[in-house]
Picture (tube, rainbow, N blue to C red):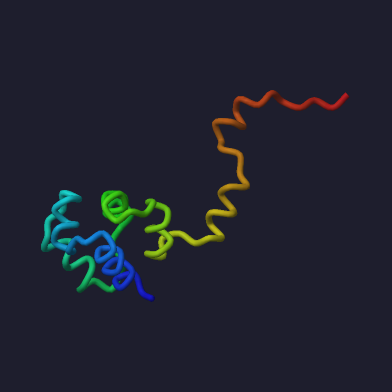
Length: 95
Protein backbone atom coordinates (compact mmCIF):
# COMPACT_ATOMS: atom_id res chain seq x y z
CA UNK A 1 0.00 0.00 0.00
CA UNK A 2 1.40 3.41 -0.89
CA UNK A 3 1.53 6.23 1.64
CA UNK A 4 -1.45 8.10 0.22
CA UNK A 5 -3.70 5.08 0.66
CA UNK A 6 -2.25 4.51 4.16
CA UNK A 7 -3.01 8.12 5.12
CA UNK A 8 -6.55 7.95 3.75
CA UNK A 9 -7.17 4.69 5.63
CA UNK A 10 -5.92 6.25 8.87
CA UNK A 11 -8.23 9.22 8.32
CA UNK A 12 -11.19 6.87 7.80
CA UNK A 13 -10.28 5.00 10.99
CA UNK A 14 -10.27 8.30 12.92
CA UNK A 15 -13.44 9.39 11.13
CA UNK A 16 -11.89 12.60 9.77
CA UNK A 17 -11.43 13.92 6.26
CA UNK A 18 -8.11 15.02 4.80
CA UNK A 19 -9.47 18.56 4.96
CA UNK A 20 -10.23 18.21 8.69
CA UNK A 21 -6.78 16.70 9.27
CA UNK A 22 -5.17 19.71 7.58
CA UNK A 23 -7.18 22.08 9.78
CA UNK A 24 -6.24 20.17 12.94
CA UNK A 25 -2.57 20.25 11.89
CA UNK A 26 -2.78 24.00 11.23
CA UNK A 27 -1.77 23.48 7.62
CA UNK A 28 -2.93 25.24 4.51
CA UNK A 29 -5.58 22.91 3.07
CA UNK A 30 -4.45 23.46 -0.52
CA UNK A 31 -0.83 22.67 0.40
CA UNK A 32 -1.91 19.56 2.28
CA UNK A 33 -4.17 18.35 -0.52
CA UNK A 34 -1.36 18.78 -3.04
CA UNK A 35 1.17 17.13 -0.72
CA UNK A 36 -1.08 14.10 -0.38
CA UNK A 37 -2.68 13.83 -3.82
CA UNK A 38 -0.57 15.66 -6.37
CA UNK A 39 3.09 15.47 -5.33
CA UNK A 40 5.21 12.54 -6.33
CA UNK A 41 7.01 12.68 -2.99
CA UNK A 42 5.41 12.04 0.37
CA UNK A 43 4.80 14.90 2.80
CA UNK A 44 7.93 16.08 4.63
CA UNK A 45 8.69 15.04 8.23
CA UNK A 46 7.45 18.30 9.77
CA UNK A 47 3.98 17.68 8.28
CA UNK A 48 3.98 14.09 9.54
CA UNK A 49 4.92 15.25 13.06
CA UNK A 50 1.84 17.48 13.12
CA UNK A 51 -0.43 14.79 11.69
CA UNK A 52 0.57 11.80 13.83
CA UNK A 53 -1.42 12.61 16.99
CA UNK A 54 -4.58 13.22 14.95
CA UNK A 55 -4.24 9.88 13.17
CA UNK A 56 -3.74 7.77 16.29
CA UNK A 57 -0.20 6.72 15.29
CA UNK A 58 3.28 7.68 16.34
CA UNK A 59 5.51 10.04 14.42
CA UNK A 60 7.93 7.16 13.81
CA UNK A 61 5.14 5.00 12.35
CA UNK A 62 4.25 7.77 9.90
CA UNK A 63 7.92 8.31 9.02
CA UNK A 64 8.24 4.61 8.18
CA UNK A 65 4.97 4.56 6.22
CA UNK A 66 6.11 7.61 4.22
CA UNK A 67 9.47 6.04 3.48
CA UNK A 68 11.53 8.60 5.39
CA UNK A 69 12.72 5.89 7.81
CA UNK A 70 13.14 2.15 7.58
CA UNK A 71 13.04 -0.56 10.21
CA UNK A 72 16.78 -0.98 9.54
CA UNK A 73 17.35 2.70 10.36
CA UNK A 74 15.65 2.18 13.72
CA UNK A 75 17.66 -0.95 14.51
CA UNK A 76 20.88 0.83 13.59
CA UNK A 77 19.98 3.88 15.67
CA UNK A 78 18.89 1.88 18.73
CA UNK A 79 22.29 0.18 18.83
CA UNK A 80 24.14 3.48 19.15
CA UNK A 81 25.09 5.36 22.26
CA UNK A 82 24.11 9.01 21.86
CA UNK A 83 27.09 11.37 21.57
CA UNK A 84 26.20 13.23 24.76
CA UNK A 85 26.26 10.03 26.77
CA UNK A 86 29.62 9.03 25.27
CA UNK A 87 31.03 12.39 26.33
CA UNK A 88 29.95 11.78 29.94
CA UNK A 89 31.33 8.25 30.11
CA UNK A 90 34.66 8.11 31.92
CA UNK A 91 37.62 7.19 29.76
CA UNK A 92 38.49 3.52 30.11
CA UNK A 93 42.10 3.08 31.05
CA UNK A 94 43.74 -0.30 30.75
CA UNK A 95 45.87 -1.38 33.70
